[in-house]
Amino acid sequence: MTVLKVVIRVVMEDQKKSRKKAMKIAATAFGVESVALTGDDRDQIVVVGEGIDTVELTNSLRKKVGCADLLSVGPAKEEKKEEKKEEKTSESLAVPLAYGSQPYYYNYNQYPVVYGYDRVDQRDSAPCSIM
Image (cartoon, rainbow, N blue to C red; front, side, top):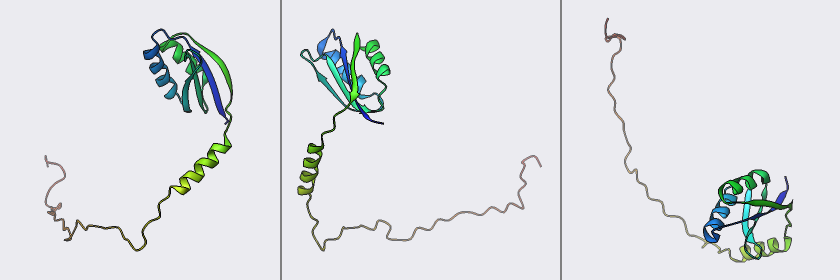
C-alpha cells in the first residue's frame, strides 16, 4: 500500500474544543502516521498514513465534530533529504561504551530452594466419597 495524504475541511463551532476533538479522532483512526491542522482558519486537517479509510474518517468527523468535507486524497511526498540528515545525526550522537566494564549482577537466590510436598497414598482413599 502507498502512503496517502488526506485533506479534510471541518467546520468548527467552538474552535479550541473542536480542534482538539478533531485531532483526537483523526489520530486514533487506523493507519494514521501524522495529523496536522492547516489553512487560514486552521480548519483543514491533513492526515498522512498508510491504509487510511477516508470515508470512515470523514463520517466520524461529521458525527462527532460537525460538517466535514473531503478536499483531497493523494500520495504523500516523501522527503529523502531529511532522512539522510537524520541518519547522520543519530550516528554522531552515539556514545561508545567503556571497554572492560561489565554489568553488575546481584544473585538474589543465594541458597537453593527446596519445595516439599506431602504424598497422599491414593490406593487407600476411594475416588468417590460415597463409596
